[in-house]
Every structure is written in structure tokens, then in C-alpha cells.
Image (cartoon, rainbow, N blue to C red):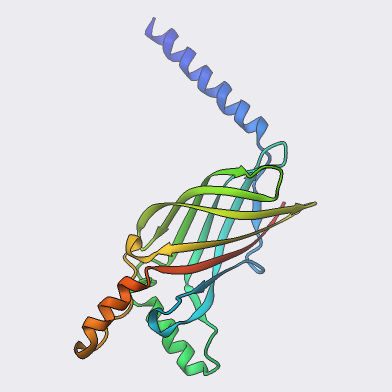
Length: 203
């Protein structure tokens, strides 16, 4: 009796898996050459902006052509500041951002965004995206609105996301003792890092 029940459960799971597979088209791959994550620290650290690159990405579409889920890996060691024309100063700021107080890129070289649900808003090209973002080994839920425009075998995704630094233990490098108090106030006044996603997917 137990064997029959077990066999029935296994068959049901197999049929469900096959049904899901038939409803899904193969995943679309991220164009790592064209895609970027643009960031802006606002007033934090004197106000800087730049980008970092993706290492890998995959987006699954339904048979009806709707995006449904995906996974994206971001290379945290690729971070670059672009606001300072002085190359030496730019490299110095890059090193600060890779420091343990901020992104700790040596210890956590990859940040991961797992997209679990994508819902179209009306009949527009805007979608609600929900998933999980892992930075510095810390995973937190994340939701944002994105524009997803698909033409032929190419899909272009743009979105703006505010990253709450405290949730991922991202802090500015401590200042000298004489201004520690002001630095602490500034940390609280600038809670977010502003991020813009510019993603290209190919079938």
C-alpha cells in the first residue's frame, strides 16, 4: 500500500514538472556586454555615481511571451566611479566602495538578484517585480517597478531601485574621530543607494 501511494505521488510530481516545462520557453540570456547597473550614492560620501557589471543573467518567459522569473549575478569587483575625471581619485573611490565597510567585494565578490514573480501592470510594458537580493551574504526581499520591452529576440529592461543600506550592512567608511558625530548623523539622513538597471536579454 505504501509503495502504491509513493508511486502515485512520484507520478503526480513528474506530471506537474512536465506541465510546467511545457508552459515555459527556454530562458533568455543576459547580454553582459551591453547591460549595466548604474548607482548613485546621493549625498553619502560626498555624492558619487558610477556603475558595475553583470556576470550572468537568465530570464524565463511563458509560452505567451510574458516574463515570469529570472536570476542575475552582479560582479561587485567591477564597480567604477565615473563622476571624477581624475583617474587616480576615481580608483581611490573605487577601493573605498570595495572596502569591508561598504560592499566588502573581496569577501563577497558576487551579488545575486533572484526574481520570483513578474506581474504586468494593465496592458502597459510596466511590470511589478518581486524577488530577493543578496549583498554581502545578506538576503532581503525586494520589490520594484520595471519597464520590459520585447522586440523579436531581444528584451530591454529598465528599472529604478532604492537600496536601503542598513538592511545589507552597507556603511560609509568611518571618518576621523573629530567628526564622527556628524558622520553618524549623515549616515541616518542618507539611507539609500539609488540604482538604475539597464538590462538587455537575448533569446
